[in-house]
Length: 358
Image (spheres, rainbow, N blue to C red):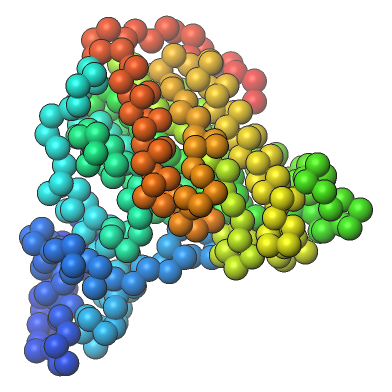
């Protein structure tokens, strides 16, 4: 873990802290030895949306609570520290036996973006948190807020557990960041506002062909992952989702600002802006649903319409109540999966890897 390196660096810089602040090295030690409390996590870290990347946050150290004077470069690794603190919290809270009705190996492996892991405590629980804490699924959660589909595939942290046979259920949340434009933002996929196309029924006018071209690439990468899971770990069932209908906000850093840039106002043209998001979200979900119909090792959980309008913490992430609803959908899917040792993958998926049309 990165925290081990940081810890070694910080240990050499121990010094007394002023003003009642916790020294940086002490923060690292608490995370490293898994003694950090929930109150500490809430106090040590500050979280802001990262407007350059959907589903992402910028995590920093709280200057009023942590003393990192003279070692500012190490303090820039706050995101990694918060992630390690989140993993440590998972380890302390993780159940050890699966819920009744689930007949597959544990722990379940999860990889994904901020729909599977958010900065702990300062943000609402995710559906993975709910699955672990309310439905008592033992889950090895590898997710990190802001990760793109490409980054997850390239890192491949999930492969050891899947290939070794330690796990045979793979939860996956990815593609949303990529679908919404990644670092370039959603504005590049939208036409400028036209008063002659101001009705929600005109939403398709605003979605540029570039969106669909990009989505095609995203879905190709996603499909390639499904195929490789089949080839390398044929006993594994992969379970994914395509998010719910996000609600743009005028001050929203990920969607709203991009829409405002092209003259679309999520406040005064709320129905139109939401209709645009429905088109984009439906297109992504349609692709994933198609994979579920093609590959027997892939299951699709449809979360569209699950999160209520008042159950969004921000433009892209549900509140605790919304997360509970999405987790219920996943729980139902997980309990419908065949028991370990009874699932056989047909060979058709492997042929698709080499012959499926793009």
